[in-house]
Amino acid sequence: MSLYTAIVFTPRDRTWVAPPELIRGIAVLLGVRTFDHFSVYHEVSSDSGLDDDERYERIISGQKIPIEEGLGRLRADRGYWTHMMFPYADFMKCLMAEVAAALPESLSRDFAPWDTSFYSGHWAIQSYDDGTLTDSGVCAFKMSANGRPSDSAAYLKSFLEVEGVKKLQGQLEALSNQPWTAVIDLT
Image (cartoon, rainbow, N blue to C red):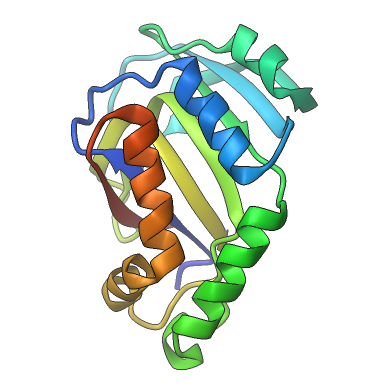
């Protein structure tokens, strides 16, 4: 059973590189001025059979980093990727209240994806069952939390039908001028 689940919003073009303006726009949308946590990783092995903890080494890490300072450290060129965690602010609190009201407890169980982050340069989903790579790309906006819905596919479908989530996806598309899609990740 999964202990951690994420809804991963990503451009349909998995090779599209997010400019700093997109990340800045997401911060404005979320109503935040800092990253709760900011890390830059460097690839130390190109062996795709290894998981991310074995393939990458963290070279920059910090907490409560102002958005503009973090964007100045952004690395998405080949061999690097950046993980930026946003604080839980009013936008997400309102969105999670809307999601909780819209989805039955029997479907969501203890899962409400309130924790938001952005990946630039690399993200990947590995099979919960056997660790094989099932999806990956260059940039992603993730909403995650502890827990697991009773039916992951049905949860994702219902989650994406919530009006506030539709608006969020529309805003990601407007900020990036790219069509976005969402997948679910169980870890």
